[in-house]
Every structure is written in C-alpha cells, then in structure tokens.
Image (cartoon, rainbow, N blue to C red; front, side):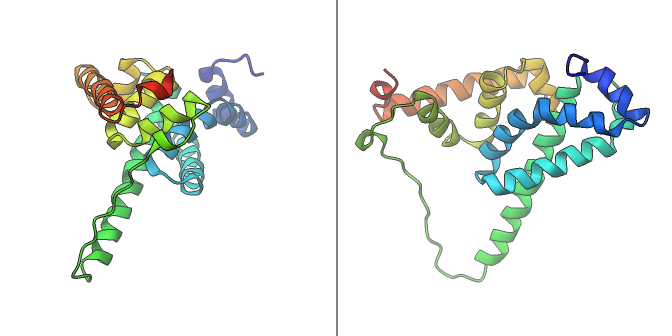
Length: 188
C-alpha cells in the first residue's frame, strides 16, 4: 500500500477508505513538522498546527484539483496556517504590550564560539532559525525538504522568480551571518 502514489491514495480515501489517509500523514508529517518548528519556534505549537493542517487537508480533499502535487498543495496549507498562527500571536502580543509604557528590547544572540558544535547539521539549523521567517522557510523547503522553486512558489503563493530572489537573498544572509560572526570554523 505504501508504494501507491499520492493521487491513488487520495482516490482511495475519497471512495471511503479513510484509514488510507494515514499513509499520506506518514509521508509528510516529518517535513511539515520541521517547517512548522522553524516558523513557529515552538515544538508543541508546531504539533498542534500540524494536526490542524492534516485535518484541513483531509476535509478539503474534494477541493484538491490535482493542478499541482499533493505535497505542494499540503505545504501551502501548512505555510498559510503557520502564517495565520504567527499573525494571531503577533496581534495578541501587541495588545498585551500596548499597556506597558516601557518597551524592552529582547534579543537572542547565540555565542557559538564558546561552545563546541559536534553536529554541523544542528549548528546550521540554528543559523537558519536566526534568519528572517521567509528566508528560513525558503531555505528549509529548498535544501531540507528538497522542494523545487516551482513547488515552493506554489506553497508560498508567489512567483518562481520571487522564490529565486528570496533563495538568493537567503543564501547571502546566511553567508553574511557566517562571515560576520566568524562561524566558518564551526562548520569545518
């Protein structure tokens, strides 16, 4: 059953074999979870949003027009749901902060030079997390989830040219971050 294509599984689910949807969940849960953690910066919240995304996708299977791959369609749901969650959190924070006269500047600077990083993958993930949200999302989808620029453009609902520009800027921002903080040695 696991050798079936996404479209075959979707057709099976539409015919009433709802338990087959678990195959799609198994295929996409890890990559979608990684993207959500990167965007939301909170694993518990990412788990909750991921469940919501799978539920939204399940309820909307009849609306899936097969103009793109299921994975791209699903990533669009994940990305947009995360953005909605982030904007809701931002509004809540703004309301809470409006009653405070003194605004504190909150910074999260990492000093990786003082600690040994044995796993360069974890180190890179931390660096990516420090990038602006859109840059981190594009880098994650392209390099970690192996999505094409076309798939990312569909997921983020923007042009392929814009994705290529964001990918270029993301790489430059990551490179600048490495150079600025002398992190190049950490990856060697």
